[in-house]
Amino acid sequence: AEYFSSGVEGTLILAAAVGISYQAWMRLFNPIPLEQLPLGLAIAVAAALMNFAVARVLLSASRQHESITLEAHGKHILTDVWTTVGVVGGLAIGMLVHWSWLDSLIAFAVALSIVLSGIGLLGRSLQGLMDYALPPDEMQLIQEILNRHGNRGMMYHQLRTRRAGAKRFVDFHLLVPGNHTVQEIHDLCEVIEAEMKNALREASITIHIEPLEDPASWEGPPA
Image (cartoon, rainbow, N blue to C red; front, side):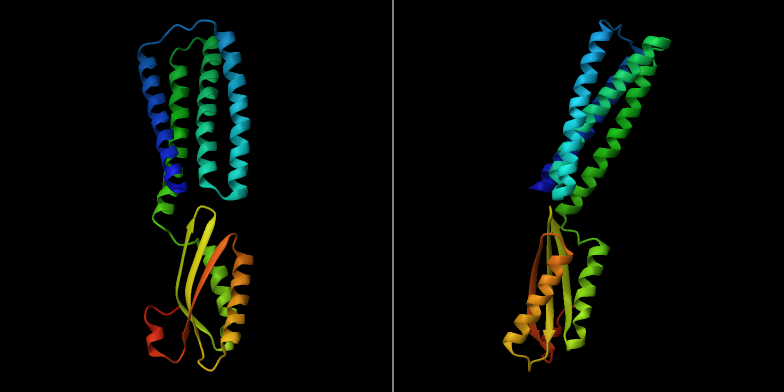
């Protein structure tokens, strides 16, 4: 649900960029005389400052909680901020130099920035919806933990990972010598699980125990 929500936000951001580009194109050939500029600029600047503060809080919270939904909301609000900045900048410069086309040019630049933000958000949302594996640095941490326990005669294979929001999921088959007791294997799994949860934030670990000597345990690609 979180990735779907952020995907919708990304689509709305792209729609806003299209709307800005369309209006900029129309104004480029059909300039509209502006009235009460000082009051309009003051209101726009005040609104932009408030939106910027809200967006910063949301983006900071998104990094803290690893939430793509909060990130999407923050970037959506930033879209309004950059739009306002472009409008204010265009109007202010237009008042000084009287270049009617400058407002449209700045609007196109703002739209391009918004498009890049929306595309990036959509890309991350699609990755989440398609259950991509964890990034290489986190995969390396997992493999290092498993390899550290290889000297006990253990092996592993069928390592699978994915991420949903801030939650990480790790699933693998642990092959152990058949002469180990249930308690020994349980203790080993507890150690491995604790190390992984310490290395990965909000991780859910699933370990499938299989006898090392049984050929059926080796079904699937070995690690």
